[in-house]
Image 1 (spheres, rainbow, N blue to C red):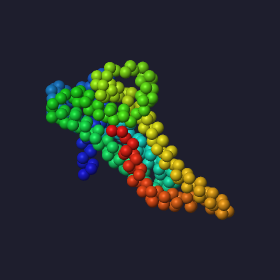
Image 2: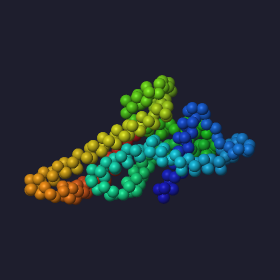
Image 3: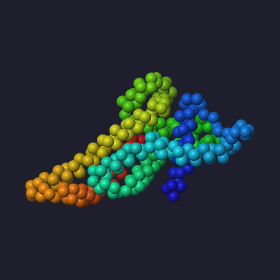
Image 4: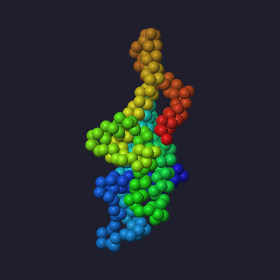
Length: 258
């Protein structure tokens, strides 16, 4: 049921992202089949768009999902957690990626719903053209990314691209004036920075446990016993008693400013 709810949104969000990048440079034209008459409305290119959506999702959806959503921060934090616990491949990679994916859907739900109501549904109802739908569809995603991005990172990419800040038409949402080619890389490095900060905080209690166990073994003269034999069950026990998965998921969801 959850997948059936999010798959239609993903199938339209991904082309919106691709089209926004192309439209920002040269303008995007609805695709047509070679040799056919020019399309005059969205219904005439339905089959072509379905093929385009399928190919787009298969080839570029993973990259777009990682770079423009909450997935990067979440998967980094979960990886740090597993490394700090010292459980190696437990939980398995499939479980970690699946948890990160569904947490991403949870965090991005309001943004995807707004993109659907502002751009996708009006376009499918033939109430706006494709270029207008792309412009409106990228606004909620851009606002989400800018809210999570450090100002220094935005300033860095604006300076490197020699892109002057466009005139702000809506003072209530200055993020709407920022180009996507600046917002996306700034958002990615901000997510990496925040994920590493989370990882450092997660590591602290587990390092303390390792130090305590090592000191106890040294004081007891049990230097031949590997400290991980004792510290690993201790860390797992502390993590369970602290309801660690609940705390990590709640902290990740609360870390995104809305």
